[in-house]
Each structure stands twice: as C-alpha cells, then as structure tokens.
Length: 241
Ligand code: MLT
Image (cartoon, protein in one colour):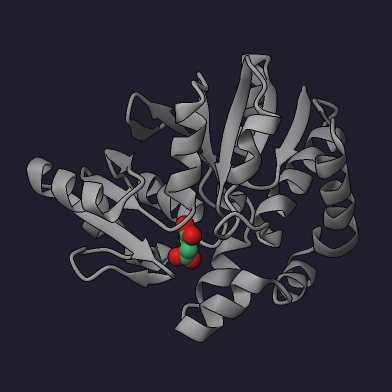
C-alpha cells in the first residue's frame, strides 16, 4: 500500500490519483472533532463548506448545527469545533451539520474531484483507519487541511505517522517525498507522546488555539487510537464503521 501526502487543499488537483482512498486530516481540530462526534454515537456528521449552507440545512433538517470560523464558534450554531463539546449525552443518535474554516472545505474539495472513497482521519483513530485501507487493498492519499491554503505541521505529521506505522507493520510505505519527510519527522520528534506534545507546541495552529483559549484540546488531539472507528463519507454524510 502506497501512502502519499497532499500538503494543502489548494494543491489537490496536482496530487489527485484515481482509485486511491483519500483521508482528510485536520488534527486541530475539525477531523478530531468529527471522529469524536461519531465515536460518541452521533448518527451522522454532514460536512458543508459555507456557514450559510450550515445554517439553512441545519434548520431544514432540524438537527444540531456545528460551525466554526477562525477558531471561534459562529453565533448561529449550537456547537463549535472543540472535541470536548461532543459528549455522548449531547450527540448520541443525532445528525450534526458541520462546517469549519479548513477541514470541511478540504473534504468538499476531494468530493468535487470525484474521489470515490473519502475517510476522515485523526490521531485518535489512526490505526483503525490504516487497517481499513489495507483491507480495501488500495493506496492512500492524505489530504492535509492546513490553514487557509498554507501547510500545518500537525496535519502533515499525521501522514508521517501513518507511513511509520504502515512500515512497522509491513503493510505499506511512504511513497512520495512529502510522506517520507514527515515519516522521518515523526520518528525523530513525535513517536513518543510527551515528545510529540512538546514538538507540536511550536506549530502555528497551536499558537492560534492558545490565543483563543482552546489549547486544552491539544493533548486529546495528539493521543493515538483512543477512538478506534473508521469515519467514512457515504453520499453527503459521514458515518462510523
Ligand atoms: C479548521 O477547520 O480550520 C479548524 O478545525 C480550526 C479550529 O477550529 O481549530
């Protein structure tokens, strides 16, 4: 199984590969939050690109609306983008319309390119996602959501971790320079949990989260395999497998 990395949604058309599973990754915090919602029993997450779509669709369906822009919850939404908000009590059995600055946009860019199989990946469901892709017998392209077209270390590092685990289990390999660089960074600076937390504190989005008072999400987002589900797009909804 070959693992490739697209470091920004803006570059997606250059990296697109037919017949490849695309994993959308926005570690801080959209993909971690979507996986948390599904892991805590949400029936589906409906990702949309704009706040207008989120408000209209959420009202039409009469379901929870989650909306974030520039790290803050949008005033019309019941939920923001902090994984701690998505408790079992609140989300179990519910559908959630969901929009964020970069994460849901990346997902919809892959959809617009006709990608057949889209998953949402986070450190908290890394190995279940890796094993699922291996069972499907397909290559993987990690689409790192980044921040407004720019690269984000925590997202690209996910591709490195995926490649490192695939190589350790002898089920896959880093197949382009992006995934190779990040596999090596993972091994050098992030394999061990406390080392990983220290390393990621240098990232740009960590500074944004601190500025907005949301840095408490970081240890949770950087933990491995705590919610071992597969988050898969079926039509316009993400569901847990
Ligand atoms: C995003 O989609 O850009 C984010 O997840 C930002 C955030 O709320 O931390």
